[in-house]
Amino acid sequence: MSIITTTYTERKTITTDDAGNVTITTSHDADTLTEYYFTELTPEAQARAISDAIEEEQRDYYENGDGMTGWNISHLWDAYTDLQKHQPIKYHDHYSSFYLTVGDAEKVTPEDGDRFDFCPNICEAWNRYAAAVPLLIEEAEDHEGIASEITAPYYWPWEVADEEPTSVLVWYKAHGDYADRCRYKADELAEHAKDALEAKMHELINETEKYYQSEDFWREWLSDGDDRYTRDGARIW
Image (cartoon, rainbow, N blue to C red; front, side, top):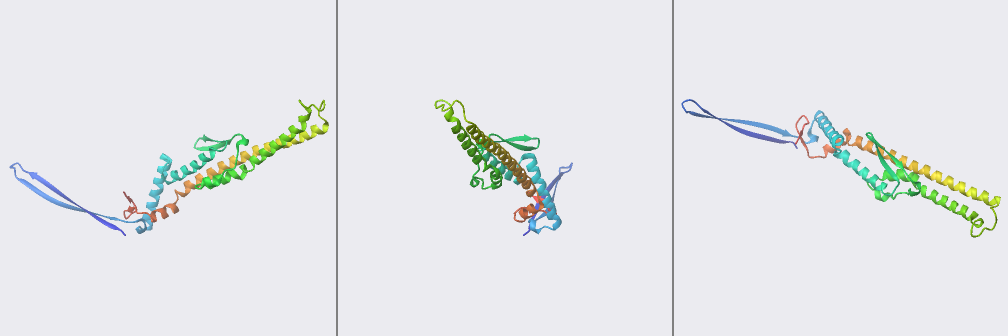
């Protein structure tokens, strides 16, 4: 329901002539302002209110990192920071954007999605590849252990023979090669996990920026709000 506010102003003008006569003149002004909810505005006035709200949101975000856009993106970065505490990944600034790098694959582990209630998508993107990495590292270590056991009897203190038989060397190499392939695949999947995480973060940031600077969002938000506007859609502070 619109609200009509009338402000009355009284002015007194005091005039004194050369003879000392005083004249007092009184005047009155009335200023009437009608305040509207967003839903009471015309389509044209609503369009202006939405445009002003988007402009304010963009200014708050791009100049100060504030606004609804900045608040929601900060939660995305909080989720990434939490993940970074457990994983060998690093963030790097790149002009107005960013990129990630991943380190030792042996430190890569899958993440528990329960810790990312606000932003589970980054956990899902990471786990798509990272979940297999520790399994590959474990398999590589198993085969490296087998390779060592195969050759162990031919070294001090056992020295069961002057040199390893050809069959021993063949199996030693086979297990060693398999372990190398496991480690290579683990490194590859660690890179894929980092790439998936980076791509998902870029995607979520872009989606957040578009959503909180969209006409659809602000129309719904302002329709449910208590802000007041002039007839032409200017917000009354």
